[in-house]
Image (cartoon, rainbow, N blue to C red):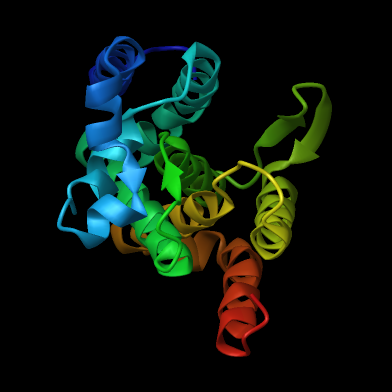
Length: 215
């Protein structure tokens, strides 16, 4: 936290430039947003490009602020290249999970870097589980408690489907950050084994619910 590394600055800059282009150009926004109908017809690139578009400046600001706070944990522990791989891998896995759950809903659309940012956040939690996060920016909560609780809430949101939040992308992104981090940092199995197991619980629960047709 604090310093803005070059890798973080590049990611933020790309998000800002693409998002602002989308704000002022509706045809650009529609072409590159995540749209099940378009993807089914061959626009597979939307699975990637939609992760750099945002609905409005507030949506963009929250995602980039969260990225700013946690990117350096990854860069400090794993390096800039690993950070980029985790960011992009989480983006793709988040949108692929959205596609999996919404593939028959031809009206489903989505945009945002939330999946990628959640991947960065969960990677940071796995790398530094003794962090304290501010719930609602006020209430101090251990990072691992927040991580488990948020994924369980995300599963709840995926079951209800009563809001406009991309819970599927959040969950997929967090899972991507979790899995890719273990590839880059196998030492977490020695230093944070309990956290590795605890953070896996919501992933196992989602898999069970999906396999049993409950979600």
